[in-house]
Length: 157
Image (cartoon, rainbow, N blue to C red; front, side, top):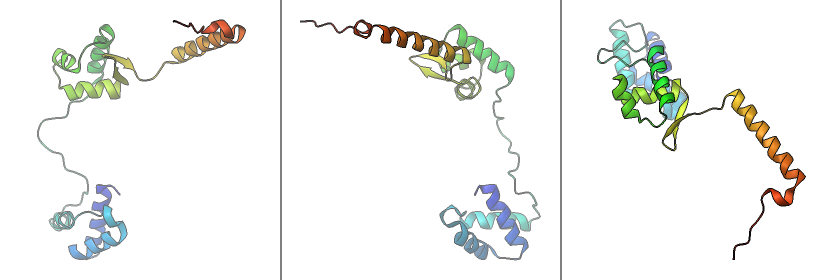
């Protein structure tokens, strides 16, 4: 069960009039190891006593998360297509965002991964898959027509 689910259960038991120790016992008997700690139960019971009704996390102030906006994704994609040997640090410096944000865009938005110091698409396109199949069929036909000379074994000695 997710932590939001735990909070709803704690809220339910609180509304039924159970004390934190009883709520913890109920959660332990049902959820065993995945039950929230007593400190967590106490915290949420106190929150509900103060009048809180939402079990969702409140908005936090601080540094905003970097969003992979379409313009940034396109910009990074264009740069990677121009030079597949670019490092994450270099890309981050060029677009002025964090390395982790660049890595997230490369992995999640563009579906690439680092391979032999180049960023390559993780999945083949339909055309690439079809070309791979066509070449494989051609090679198989050549092999079947002349097995002896397909991959000749040379004795060096």
